[in-house]
Each structure stands twice: as structure tokens, then as C-alpha cells.
Image (cartoon, rainbow, N blue to C red; front, side):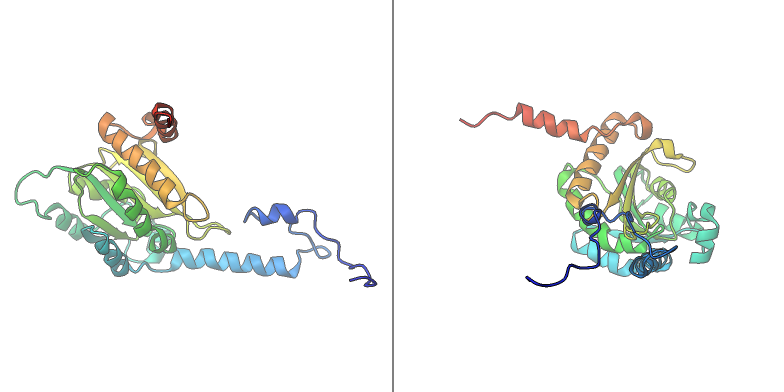
Length: 267
């Protein structure tokens, strides 16, 4: 309004940059420290990350959501008895509880070898918040992109789980391919990031170079549709070529370009 004195506060030239990213940049300062509002935001983000790590996954609620999509589910746990043990002993989070291993191996086996293409494991990992929010929507987007004759093991909802736990679970079902959906380590701007790990011929002792990874699945990162498209492409190619990890490069974007090039032009 005319006649008003100019504001004593100088507008930050970084405002447009900060509006475009959740990254912590151009925080400013108040004397020798950070401004109060930035200190409060940091404390809130840190608390969200801690809560994501320590919160327990509601495995029953997740199983119910998957049942509504038509997935058969089972539950399992690692050899880490509680969250404190899980955080202190990563090796126990990679090993399947002995009783659960026997139960999975005997599931509808009937004494005959099973013919299963894919075993999907949903593990709480380091962010149960990510799994609770994003696992069901992602699997809902995935299934229509796979061949209808794909043979699935029951989706296993696993608690106190590390990535390698999917190898032993899939081995129990004699599956050709394991897909692990797991909560990733929270960041200060992403407490609910979901990761996906794919391994061909899963078995105990597999290492990370034998896996493919899709990271940061969430609405603010990689969308459900884009993640499902990449995952479906990797699953199809892993089964077709009989490999995964460093030997299987993600060329899903090339398949999109090729389909556009071969599409007939409109009259």
C-alpha cells in the first residue's frame, strides 16, 4: 500500500530454489546459529525419521489390504526377536525364524515340487511407515503389468526383516525370482521411502551385486506407476534371461522409446 514504510526484512534470493526441493539448503543464520524456525523443522524431521525406524508394522492390516487386491498372504519373522536386537544385529534380520521356515516350506507342498515364478516379500525394514503407506498401492499397480500366467507364491509379510531375508523365504518356495519390498533407511526429508530388490535364483548366500534395486518409491519420489513399470520389466527380463544384478541393466526406458518408434502414425 502506498505510503507504507519498506519492510526491514530482506527477501531470501534462495526462496524459489527452496520451494522446488525438500532438501535442506539456504537455511540462513541468526547470529552464530540457525534461525529458530529451521531449528524446529530439523527437530521435527529428525523425530519423524526416528519414529519411522522404531514404529511396529501392522502386519494384519497390510495383509488385509493385499487380500482385497486378490493376493494370498502369509506371515513370517526373522531371527531378531525385537526391534532393539534387529537394529544391533543386522545378521539376525537376514535369517528366517526356524519355525517359520518349516511352515513356508510345507505350505501346500503335498510332497510334490512346486512350480513358482515369483515370491514377493514385504518387509518392514528400517521404515514400517513406508511399507504401510506404499506396499499395497505398488502391488496393485504391478499385477496388471505382468503376464496373466505368472505363478506367484503367497506374498509373505515379514517383520524385523533385512533385504537378504527374501532369499531364504523364496528358497522355501523354490521360486525362480524373489522381489523384496522394504522400508528404506529414513532421511530427514523422506521418512517413508520404499525400496525394491529383485534377485534371480534366490537362495541363502546371495550378495548385493546379484540384485537389482529400485529406490525412493513414494508419491514425492518415484510414483507407483513408474516403479511398477520398471519392476515388471525387470521381472520379465530376469525370468527370460535367467539373471539379475549387475548382469541385468534396467533398459525399461528403451522399451518405451522402441514402442513409440514402431507405433504407426495416425492418418
